[in-house]
Length: 181
Image (cartoon, rainbow, N blue to C red; front, top):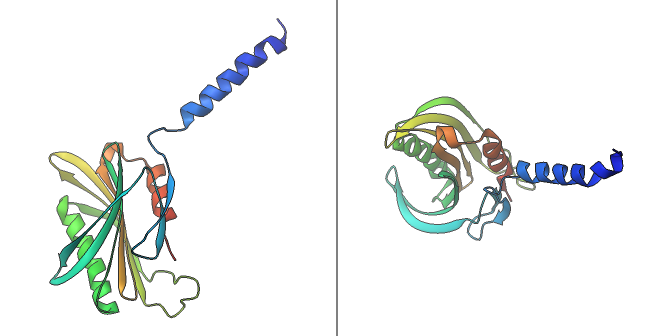
């Protein structure tokens, strides 16, 4: 047999392998918020909802934009506090509430100052990154979160779902795509 008779078979096989490597479950799309100055890539078409929340005695309007794929939630929440001190307090309150929500243990936590956006070297900012595990309705859960304040605005960027269903590759894709503008 000549190699040229295998060429269509090889091309078909390679195309099938390439398509199998692409997960139809994740349909990444760029999203720019209408309410806050951020961009992020969502793994599916997101929905946006706003409501008033109590964050340790401070009532704020919080806008949550989220997409869910196979039971894993990818979400960005944002709001505005009366001042930078209260925005930093909101960051800590959001982290505590989410960790408590799944009875989680924080496996890793990194705190520091967030990098200032271009042209805003004087921005007051802080950030907390966590990776936590807990249980919700009897199922082992994982929460990966980035909580950030920039002047009066605050943000929570989270991936949360059943521990066994969360792909580290998808977490990194989502978390690294979050950018303040």
